[in-house]
Length: 81
Image (cartoon, rainbow, N blue to C red; front, side):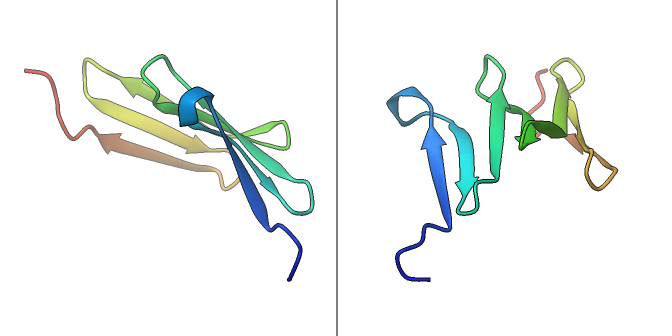
């Protein structure tokens, strides 16, 4: 596909977090982060497709993929004492 961009990415200030991925046909994914720069939401063409919640005290997280109707639970690698 010479001369056609398949995907482009946009980052936050100072080459920070990935904030948007735009595909050649115009569809895009937006990424949102919390104050600790951890991903908390993905939006596909303005519709929320995935949300991530975290419990710092218990050290686990839950990711819900609204498109596939899946729920993931995972433990943190490092838990506070």
